[in-house]
Image (cartoon, rainbow, N blue to C red):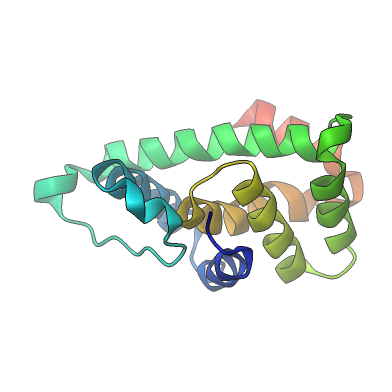
Length: 152
């Protein structure tokens, strides 16, 4: 399993990217990991777009969006659910809300990694999920997050 600190550091670096770039990056990462499963441990994976081997960008963006929807829903269940086995990750994420966006990105990256998300994808998903779903709704987190999932 990838080192949590490395994934958190990568997630915080990727937080500088815009939403569309992250969605595309996630799709590209998935394709690279399918070709070489050993890359799922490389939190700093930065695949380069190559139309010859990756095809057109739209399917990559669709794949990235599909991955975002899936893991966002899973993470919502972890944070807003009632399963006792999820208590540690839930407390880390909710506790980080008082520290700032960077801390939440780190907590989300660690939780995604613990959920089995490949390291580079967890690093790219964390800032995207925080910016799009968690941070704007932090005061009414679970209710607003569920509404965001329903709209997405």
